[in-house]
Length: 481
Image (tube, rainbow, N blue to C red; front, side, top):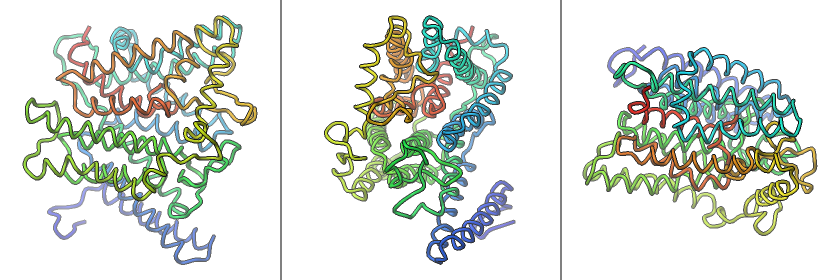
């Protein structure tokens, strides 16, 4: 199959993607018309599917995708999607985690080889330590069921670190050995494919004022933000987060074409707008500032893996992310978007979408906890969810704050491990031999600690697994044992 202006046959993956997109667009149009009896709604569904196909096309076009990176990113983003899509059916997520753990275990044999290098990774401290501490706390307060579940969680996410080390070939014996493998490209390709799947799943409501949202008490008043479709749902902040993470990895990677960097950056802004995510906008805004600073610094001292620009292209590359951020701000109402008080809250509670009430509750629970739980973390539930009287006991809340989450899950020792992890990660990211994207992603993620858990190891740890692959690559030359 050939196209005008394209020399040679179109790769089979694009032919397959075009065919799949066409079939999906036709199916979405038929379903939407049958549901609404409106041609305009059917046309909107077709446009949404075509946009999803374009995002998938960007994903498969990335050079350097590895099966290992695709598996790492795919498992984590799929677990995140399923945890929201089937929040009332935990067996679905546990089944995926079981497969994930088996794959990682087989991939990272022999496991003891990677134990020592993993301890040197800041991301390992961020993602695994509080699970281990939580096991101790649950045992001390005689909650064997919670301890067993946390043991499984710790095993899966600990094996994920081992798998990243194995896939990158960090920590192997034998001197120089083969060149390290960059898994991060496959991870962001999986993120983009997830975005494409959510656009296709939610094609019937993408352009509507009210969207399909989680059908639980927690999802009340959340239908003003895009989540996906009836079968695939993902929290809007998480959806914005993986879009920005992909933009950072692609936008600051030397091996990508200019159109890929442009498309990834514009996509991040579009997703932030559709899902109405202030956390995503802050993440992209801080990354834009760091990106511009690195471009200026690069003219004095080269920065590893940063794209080369000159003249007007340098100015355009520096300005583009700011234009995207400004466009989103204007389109969403400017300052009103940043200061709006959602979900009927007032004061700081409304500004933080109720998070501050959750953090206060965590503090109260910590004061009331037993001594082992103060030290090793809350042991009432495996994931240390929070219950607020204002929300009702049937609503299980996450902390939506990585630092508070570390305290909740791992107690005082968990909070200390969190600080150690960030220190180790930032020290690695600041190395002259580390990739520019890792530095930008790690530093830009710091403000999001206050509103998201995605830098912690868990089913929502998409940014965490991307940082793991960046850190293992940066340390691959120094952690051989």
